[in-house]
Length: 113
Ligand code: SF4
Ligand code: SF4
Image (tube, rainbow, N blue to C red):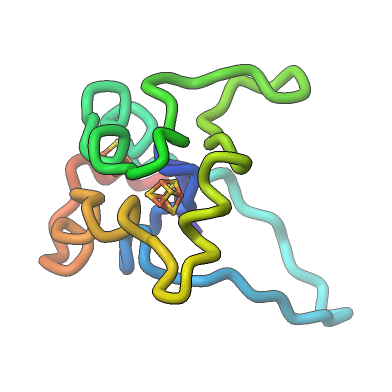
């Protein structure tokens, strides 16, 4: 579906970071495909847009290790008071450059496998 960005969100080719995940329970046999490689993680190494814009300082500049896996993760304790405000926050969604790329149908790196 997408690849995790520095803002800790799944970034998809079609919608950038602007979508919500849901689930459907089924017994239909479905083959698992490979993880998406859209170039998001690579791009995020040099982009600082969400890191600079986050009002709580919850977004780190680089990946950390979570339960043995190297990944981007945010500080939920810092983020939560902003998300829980009446109007929420979502600044890290708004400023993400993949919004624009997804909406224009242009992607930095498209790999077909
Ligand atoms: S929701 Fe707001 S406070 Fe939380 S990580 Fe995103 S920009 Fe930062
Ligand atoms: S704003 Fe930049 S660093 Fe943050 S998730 Fe989007 S592309 Fe990655």
